[in-house]
Amino acid sequence: MQIAIPAERLAGEARVAATPETVKKLVAMGHTVVVESGAGRLSAVPDAAYADAGASLAANRASALANADIVLQVRPPEADQIAEFKTGATVVSLMNPYANPHLAAMAAKKLSAFAMELLPRTTRAQSMDVLSSQNNIAGYRAVLLATHYYPRFMPMLMTAAGTVKPARVLIMGVGVAGLQAIATAKRLGAVVEATDVRPSTKEQVESLGAKFIEVPMTDEEKAASDGVYAKEMSDDYKRRQAELVTKHAMAADIIITTALIPGKKAPQLISAEVVRAMKPGSVIIDIAAEAGGNCALTVPGEVSVTDNGVTVVGTTNLPALVAADASSLYARNLLTFLSLMLSKDGFTLNLEDDLLAATLITHDGAVRFGQPSSPSA
Ligand code: NAD
Image (cartoon, rainbow, N blue to C red):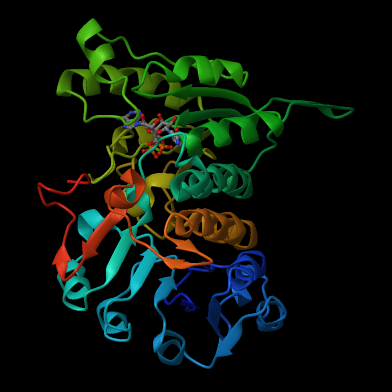
């Protein structure tokens, strides 16, 4: 099979979908790999490293894709890019399936398109889980970004000139990103608190040495919110949460928000009033900025300072700020996923496989995502 790795086109997307390590493995399986020249430049992978791993280099995207049976990307293909694929090719990438306007175009091109964000969160899928590998990086980078904007120290310091108090960090949403943010802030010496709608996260927060802020919940609410993913909460719950959040936000120096609900706009956890009640010099890093943001004042892609001196950071795509490691983990996730279909003997798309069935959004000229027969609907 011929496998292509085009350079990413989205502004600020510094990651790449294959590394010399994964290229070497694909070539060892007997496949041909074509990399668009410059694809790895922002991930610290020069063209020569791909060539040494056994890939051929293509001068541009169109020539990389022309004969490709399989295409690996980070971001979903845009409308003009879909035309460049070979009819019937397989494409594996993040696909933004809930808001992707090009599903019909991908189906018309007979692409077998896999959306990696739809991978079930099961033990078997863990090594292919791009949301986990990338959100882990986002949580780490969010804390470092906070230290950049925060005008004080993170740890407590006892110096001859006096003692400096440690920063108080509040993490909202304790999924993969939130847990890594807690761990990173603790390593830097901050005092850390965290909250989540899923009560089961309390134990995880405490095991990292942080304090869990528990929103009072009825037994029905507890039962309803203890799945793998958070559900949208009732207005009454939101009111109770807002009261508690206001109190803790006013005491916090840094807030990192990570709350996401798959397929929906990110829930608002911090209102403009709460930001106005925060201390001057405090910082909000909104990891959910790309999904609309958890803070009412977040502007995706921008950093703003309020009249009362709070810095609201809406920087999107934090994993791309750690592009080399983000790419290596993403590329390994994709290689493991591909091995469900690809072997030395060829390529088999087995729709009985739950991981393939859940992620395949277009196939055989039809859109599968959102259809009642599709497991991802
Ligand atoms: P996510 O990015 O979807 O959301 C981040 C966190 O925000 C979640 O913990 C969620 O509960 C929380 N949240 C949502 N709405 C909220 C609100 N209104 N207020 C406060 N918090 C809110 O989460 P994720 O990192 O993708 O993890 C989701 C789940 O998947 C977790 O249970 C995680 O342990 C699980 N997981 C399982 C596997 C696996 O077994 N393969 C791998 C990774 C993650």
